Image (cartoon, rainbow, N blue to C red; front, side, top):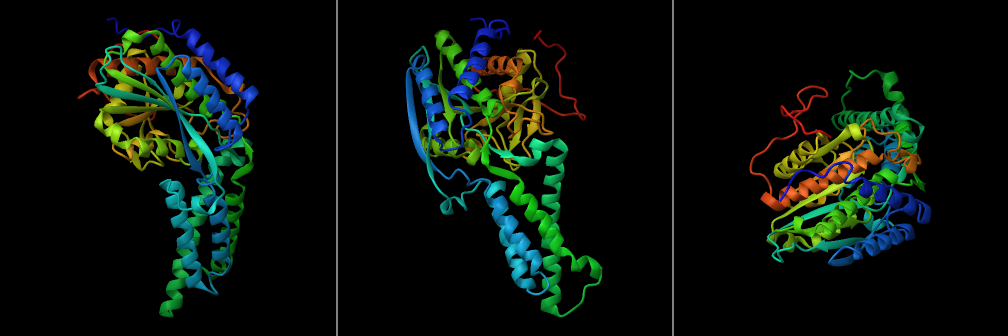
Length: 431
């Protein structure tokens, strides 16, 4: 069997179909808030498309709090403003409130825990799961390729420009840290009846200004009344996954040993809730049969095609063998995938890696961040067909290599030697 990667021209009809699908969904359903009617209709559309090519299509329902992930921002904005206002009259109370707000931010966003979800309105969301059985009829291993159907609430500061989102993010971290440090200082002085002189009096008098800055930025960071179109994030990933799945349906002999699953999750933007729901419900089955997971998230910027090595704000490392598998498939397609660490946010791959199921993610977005990231500019005009074409090709080659040999025992990994230097073999095939 020929394991030469499919060419760009061969995949052209699949990438064109992907663009047409994105356009159709944007026209018919528009922005897709987690748990919304638009998300549901999009998932129903995907399910109907997958029924035409899959041996089995299932729908998994779960409950989600759409505001769950990001509600920590306005909540901690109010708390930290309160802390800064009472820091010298009631220092212990200010310290306690500041610690509570930092713990909420760390758990809810830093680790994607559901500590606020129980207090917030709930909706129903869903996952769509399509399956292709191997041509041999014997399932020796499983590959899950995954994208998410929902789109995000708008980030106000990124809508205004990259410099604004960078400054706002820096100020949020800096002011929160300073309020915390000054609350410790004031509490120490209050408990031990001493005066600590390294902080000038005029600085102490205006600590509440730090709380005001944090509060204004945190309350204004997300516009919960505006849901973005999400053409790149993540219709591009979802349709790439479906088109790669379609390619294997059209080439059934390419799957000899592998059960291929196309997973379109709901409510990723609410904190990977769909991926967690799937991983939790199917954990035993995923552990019994060797399984690898490739999430695809935002195939927007060709020059930024990469494989995620660390996820969830840098806390979660992904499986080195899956990273190597993706990287090798990219090289065989003539594309060097960059090593990517997701420092703010996460991909669906995290839900699987946290359960020790081998996983990683294929991404392509300017980390600046991109001007379309979580803004109304994430529309059809921002979609790049070449990037989606490359994503489909890499996915196909990844699955083919996995079907032939499983996960590689040894293989090259993407290594950033200098600012933009990636480990490169001596010869790369033509694009």
